[in-house]
Amino acid sequence: MAVAATTDLVTGEGLTILAAMLDGMAYEARAAGVQAILTPVLDVNSNPLNPIISTRAFSDEPQVVSGLGERYVKGLQGSPVPVMACGKHFPGHGDSQVDSHTSLPVLDKDRESLEEEDMLPFRRAVMAGVEMIMAAHLKAVELDPVYPASLSQTVIRRYLRNRAGFEGLVLTDALNMGALAQSYSSKEAARLAVKAGADILLHPGDPIEFLNVLEELIKEKGVTKEEIFMPASRLAKAKMRYCQAIRLPDRQVAQRLEENQSVAQEMSSRALTLVKAAGAFPKLREIKGNIAHIVLEDDGDPKAGRALRSALARQKNVKNLFVTRPKLEELRPEALKYTKEAALTIISIFSKVSAGKGSSLLSPELVELGRNLLSRSKSCAVVSFGSPYILKGFPDASYLVAAYDPGEPMQSAAYRAFLGEIVFMGELPVRISG
Figure 1 (cartoon, rainbow, N blue to C red):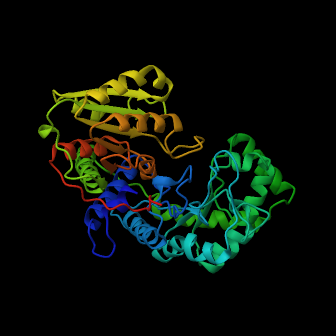
Figure 2 (figure 1 turned 90 degrees about the horizontal axis):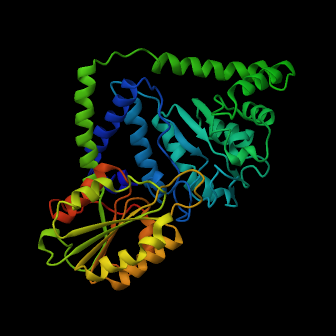
Figure 3 (figure 1 turned 180 degrees about the vertical axis):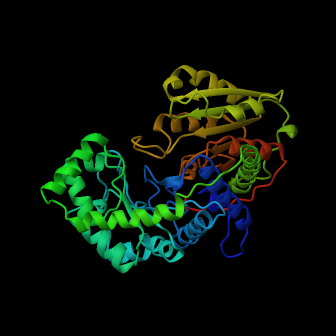
């Protein structure tokens, strides 16, 4: 989403820095010996409650996802040191409300919407030359009422191969995920995936056992020679293009890494989005009185917001308080006291989008504390270093800022915005009101 906030496909704004970012990604991957990257995410995040896609998607608009997906494919695969791109998660995971790491999402969505919205970015990626696509562990009942897409001949062969015209590699999402593990044995999942047309069976729970399973299937004629040889042929073709050795001297790599840090910082500064402002955005040096910086951390990460906390600590009138969910009740009185005494309260929210968490939003108890802080503050700015949908929970804040990502470049950008050194340039790539 930070990339989408930075770029405008109509005016061309931000496309130069995007091209530099993609070339930097390809370079760093090849320097590390990696020839394929599982990006871009081509899911259209049409469900704000999606627990696992959220900020991993570009937008809730199919055309935006399609356009940026094309840029990723061409930028990564067309780099001077190319890496293979992989569009995921076909036929589209953005409208789900279930995390496939834990259980199987079921999309009861009409065929026309699936084709014209969810599958559109994948068709555009195929036209752009993407060489790998990941099939999702989700059941789109209008496409196949029996099997999840990753095991479905209808979805992979009919819709991806025949209708979209895709001739590259198809890999399943990870086979050890709960969406499959709850309903299919390793042997059955392998058989169905191969018959569905998958070329790569990704991340089985026990690789050695899984190799034995594949050998058994071949001996039992559970899969045919043709179903094995065709993927082998496609893999060989991909390796010929992407697995040629590239020598990158250490000094050159070090210099490029430094350059890429500058690209990351510029991208972050451009992405920072002012969602709401009750007047001019506050500048720390102009605030008379104390400033309370309260970090609400949702995942038990003691390093969350460390760069921003350290930077703000250089301001003499700023008091930092780090509130993680397990210590919420212990720190609540102190947080309320800091806020009541402050001329400005900054609430920085760190809540990751991660497998098995069950939500991409902020925990209810932290939302409650945040609202209590708002009710006691004279002026308050809320910054989400994660899902922008989190901001919807704080409508009474004086200022709302979408920062999209918890990394240090974005924290640095937020600090510079509070100093007045940069202006907000990002455009919100999803709808969070209503």
